Image (cartoon, each protein chain N blue to C red):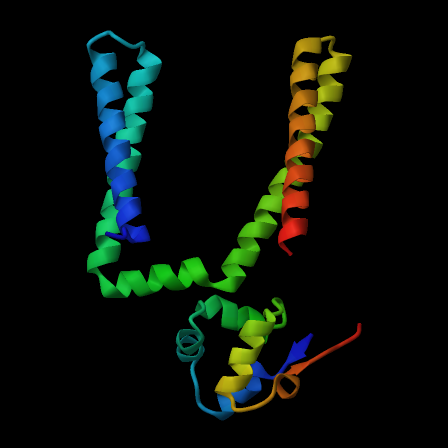
Length: 65
Length: 136
């Protein structure tokens, strides 16, 4: 599953540390999310989308491959 | 009065220290053998380390926040559960290889021990699977 977390974060001038703190996760989790190594739970995906004021579908792109 | 989880952990650490100290003293006075003196010392050491961590957790806000994030981080939880799954799988494979090797070497007792370990792991896996199946 691809995502736009890194793009959205940089657009808003948020640091990985700041996003991690807002989501109560580690900075490594944000890094893994951005590189696509880790897919978040639906709850974390919802929290991320909410922080960016977007829907889950706008942040995460389901890739059937 | 309701006891918080942090308080329960502190009480448990103190209990480790007391039990370890009692075992250590009994071993030093010759009531228990040398194995128990090492065991008692280890319990005391673990209890003291845990107690220091709990005190730091309760008094240092920055450390508390760091620990809370580490413990509740969903990627960490996922990694931990994956690591346990790998551990179980690799353990069974190693035990199977060891069982075959011991059988070929004619060491039937060790072969049976390895086979028993594999059987126990399979039973635990089956029980855990059934419990989780009911839960989710």
